[in-house]
Length: 235
Image (tube, rainbow, N blue to C red):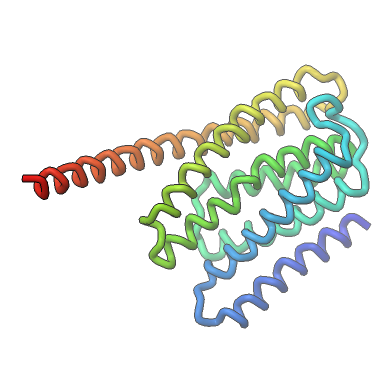
């Protein structure tokens, strides 16, 4: 049954992509793929937030528990998307090894969780933490494509993305991993997967620190240039 649902999820994401390509024929393939990515990010964050904060159990306290129907639904939804996006990225060669590794680990982690029938709450928590920055990442790309990135809105999106990534992927993710490792319930392979995903977050973090440093330097140069122009006007 789960296999059938996963195939239906994959079919749904692929169908949505082709519909967008037909409707937005004037846009690039990547534009339409990122629309699918944006929709998945919003859906995944919404569903997993409800699971963690309302439906339960609390992932920091009860890791390793049996999967609930809602958790299974959320994982199957994302499994179909990750398979679609992985195939798209490989075909069009748009992503590097780090992002491909992220997709591979996400697919394997979801498959393992579904196969074991437990630790669904941790997988949903990881989905929430990894996808919560996704809408901002896509907004940043769309702003670049439409020529609105070098504006105040672009700066706000960049700042929010960096802050949210650091808080969710590093601090909250680190706390989640600690709870996972000290709990006797989760299987050994699940714990290994948690360590791998957290290590990958630090790989992304290195790139984000470099980006933040370049952005800060750019802002400083712009401020210096602006002050220089103001001084010339006063003279």
